[in-house]
Amino acid sequence: MRTSLTLLIIAAFALPATALAKGPDYALLSGPGINGSIRIDGDGENGMDTPLGALATYGGFATQVFGHHPNDPTTPVRPAGKLGPRYRVVYSVPAPNGRWSIAADLYPFAIPRAVTYMKPGQPFYTMHTHGGWYVARPGLRRTLEDAGLPGASRSGGSTHTWRWLGIGAGALAVLAAAVLLLRRRPQSTPAPAS
Image 1 (cartoon, rainbow, N blue to C red):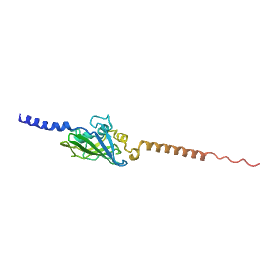
Image 2: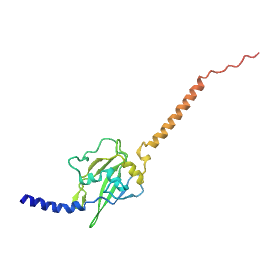
Image 3: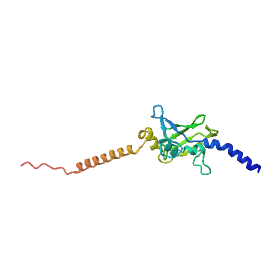
Image 4: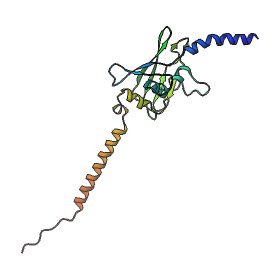
């Protein structure tokens, strides 16, 4: 009986903190190629219907803030591969007595997939962030580019760049073939003078 009462009291104190734990209502993105910051608005808690919702979903916000055990997709170890440029996103989370800011690093051009990192232990409400590295879901880079992140020039190899390289290589191949055909063409010899 005493154990049940203790658990009930602990649950009663934990419930208000959990009930208050809402998602962000905007975020500020900064980093290379961005003058100042880009504000991303929307509902960061209920799916991908808004730009902020897509950012939070693809970037692993809920997982990095609250943790999901035992199938936690975050890791304390940086994923293998090249990270590329680092961007900073600061999520603004409304609270009854003000706002909480939770920061994460974004690597949208990491190879083979975009990754995010949130420092563990950032305070919010009466809790602290779970944190860790998170391999982002497909769509993070597109979401950030739609919000105004400079795209192809930062990736070191966007589809657009590869398309132009392919066109250039094709044009060079046609030119080389034409030169070879002209060189192999039999030379006409002048008719003997009579």
